[in-house]
Image 1 (cartoon, rainbow, N blue to C red):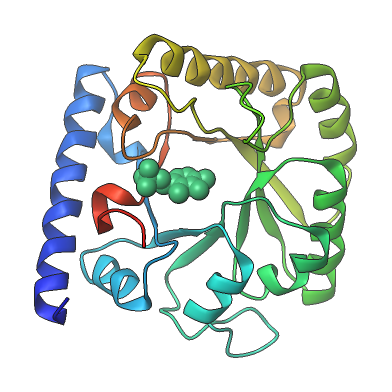
Image 2 (cartoon, helix red, strand yellow):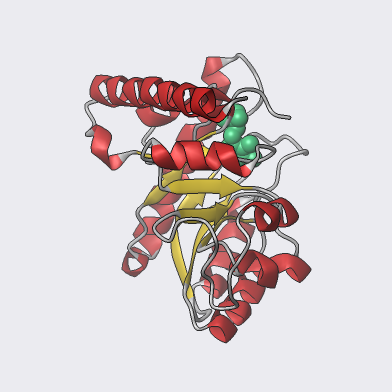
Length: 243
Ligand SMILES: *Cc1c(COP(=O)(O)O)cnc(C)c1O
């Protein structure tokens, strides 16, 4: 797509998603300014991220380390990258231990912690880089085997007890992906389960001062807002279907 057309298209898409976020928030009696829009740029070239940046987006999500590197190449070991300095890039996919170091050269946050060992490695690498990494715990609320995330509360609670003692990590909250279905009730139940888990963990660990509930994507973000989400992760609605 020619660049000016691309910018215009992405800008229009962002405007309409922001309008929908605002009206969903209003309907739910919430302040729209507490809900952040993350642009998920996976499979799309850098121009798409640039277009979203020009339209005011500062929060970006990628789910593969190699693609994240190709797009947002780090300039140095210290964690700066060639994209804009005031942009936040979060890793949102399943992260293998041997790719943590590369991921942290670019991402300031990993929103998809699905086991203790990943958090442990992120802690180690963050320490070596002299930085603190924000993390979200991913919970599999749909039961779909294709999805990552913790799958039972007992394991989750035990892991949080250990993760919270790791250095250079900041546990911010939770992330989930709803089931892939048109069944609005099932989607809502999935989001509600995550919000309930958040409250449980918050009650056990109030000192963590968790503040993030990342749920809702292109097709279900309105339901997610009704259920308390404050980060909406949107790809398709901003950039078109994936390459
Ligand atoms: C791809 C992806 C998204 C965005 O999905 P869309 O349906 O394109 O909006 C959100 N979250 C995660 C974890 C993803 O992998």
